[in-house]
Image 1 (tube, helix red, strand yellow):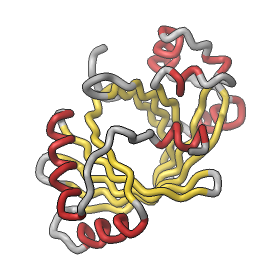
Image 2 (image 1 turned 60 degrees about the horizontal axis):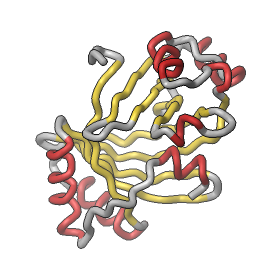
Image 3 (image 1 turned 135 degrees about the vertical axis):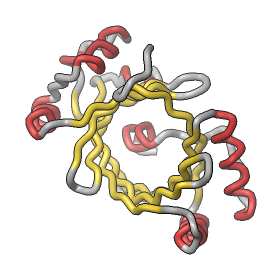
Image 4 (image 1 turned 90 degrees about the horizontal axis):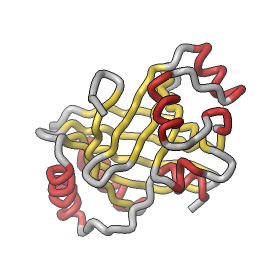
Length: 197
């Protein structure tokens, strides 16, 4: 697939943390010299009744960013990075998606059909709210998240970079002073929210 303004590759490394670790890491980076931004996202997840997307390592979400902007994303998990197809929604598209589960953006519709998923079978499943601190490091973006979903709260760190190997190595460097290590058991936000994990 060609990469353009709306289709990109995302290279991330992630780890779950507890509340104490979250507070310590957040304070450390709030006090740091790095450029940073606090953002509130609300993610609305869509799937088929039998969760075909979730079960085939795909995520379809509408994200509300800081109460002012809506973006639709289809994320397809890959071995060395995730393909993301993004589309900023108009008010009409957002309302059609929330009220009727109607998707009108062709690249996402085409990819769903390519994957054997009937777009008319897509429906709203659940949502997850994130309080996010984004920290711009030299070669990456560090994301420190507090997530709320289905009467639960959890915490995670993500590093986004231009290479999967760099994202992994930078995450290891970031968490080492806090006595953390990367485990292979990370479950993405969509699955945590949809399966109520």
